[in-house]
Image (cartoon, rainbow, N blue to C red):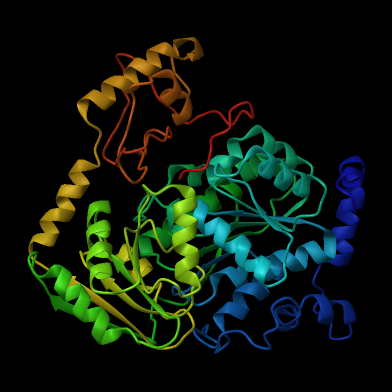
Length: 497
């Protein structure tokens, strides 16, 4: 049904949904057997005859298949699958199925631009051209082309960051489509107890409620590889309280039986040699497989990559300071096997489409156990054996504390932000609150510069300032109060780098 017709005749859309997307489970129904069978859908769109056998649910059914089945039946789900066990398929099949039956759009909320781009490119390589992404890295013509595909009903999936839900153009095209499924990838970002909390993820529930109006919201599918019990509780309570959506928990744990984990002692003076020794001992010489060496800082990635190149290895560094073209070039060269080793910060690897990484080395200890599971999980996504080696030195712990302390805003940076807010004084609401995006603050204060890798806003403020840590609060009652930006479509927030 063309979007214009659906907009004009709302009842017709409901009738079509009832006829074509209601699972009757009758053994005599040829439509349900053909259109609502997860295995048939998997074979149709991806060419596989069966889902991955591990992990299984409590009835011995592949968890991947169970999540797909529940989502196709309209159940809201929180699925926890180990890294590398095919979370993407869990939303791609229900999305393609709903689009095939009713033309409904699936909106996928994802935390990183690179992750979204990899997903779209991966589907394109599989012959699926109905997925688009809208993010701050696109040129204006590219962005408009993606939005047009959504508006005209040509897109089955729209992958965006949560910040894009505040964009007037994105909100406009969503209003012209029927949304059949909401997907939150890397769902731990929702939880204030998660290791990479993103306050804008908390806005998603509010947006869905406003978007749905008086009608029940479309099903919600949350997917993650790591979730502590308190994170699981927080995610489920969030959607239950805001949308009355009771997420079915399907937990596959975090066990990866094809990975071997090892901890080796190292010292600052021998660290480079130890990394080289691990690579030479653990990385197969034949084939196009590769290794990732995770480092705590950008400078370390460059130093490690340069050392490995001097030893004759095809190596390169990767971190958030590279230009977009440089990032794409490094990732693609690594994917096709032209590069053997990548020395990277944790900016690398989320969703990277290279299943045959045989070795992950941590030259420095990661910031948390969850980070370690995510990063080590890049290895062996083809289900073949792979190695994960952590090089541990006693002073690494102190370095992590130091990095955490450096992520806080400096006094002159806070002063520059307050200066910018005074320049935006005309935006003050009747309650004395200044509502502004990070981009507007930076434009208002030209001297405002940050040189850190990631954005970590405090829970009391949804203004995303690059370099702010969870402990950093910009609220100053003597000058202004920073609150959650209004969902008004007149202000759009670009995707984070």
